[in-house]
Length: 280
Picture 1 (cartoon, helix red, strand yellow):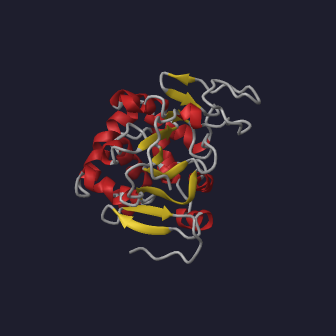
Picture 2: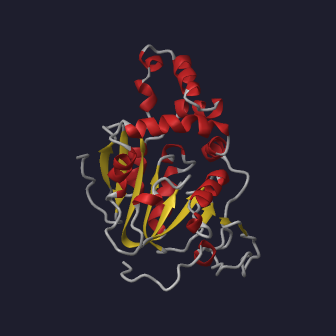
């Protein structure tokens, strides 16, 4: 682990590697080996393969579209009911290392809601598949300019062992490739460093009346009423991935915690391999 803060925090472009050939970019707008362009436009590094596919395409369209603004008050209400915004987020962030200085990565940084809860001495870098959310994060926290990356969690444009910790809060349920994303989080941190993933239970919609009475159309209507667009609502209802099985394969020694009054989960891994403890 790093114990001293550097004289200057590098930009994401200075830390990043080429998405195509993995050569170090060194802050250049194009890869010195293969020539692939990685422009830094207005403080956001472009390191994404377009067009997006699968659930990542659906999620990016939602978070960049009008649905996110309609849904966000419901998200805030949910977290408020879990003891308040800060308390709900700290149930997850408490698993990050207690260090005066750290270089950490948030995958799915969104508007940057977790940033005020992190130690002031940390260098935080953020990745998201929704460029609009990265722009909102930059505008809200100008110090993040140059440390934000438009990229997929399944293909992080950073070398191995770049960060002291990495985490993802919210959105993981609908990543295109959960196993790949977990492996990437583990790859980009130092050996023994913490990786943390948390989200609501993927079957949370089973608590709706539509599910209880066997009428999925009513559940779909409810999801639309809280702001989800038709494609995102359909993705929620179609979710079948066994996240527990995926996590056991990708992070064999991880710990799983129940959060948010058992309506969410938090996976914590340090790279060790052993028997997976049961939920406390």
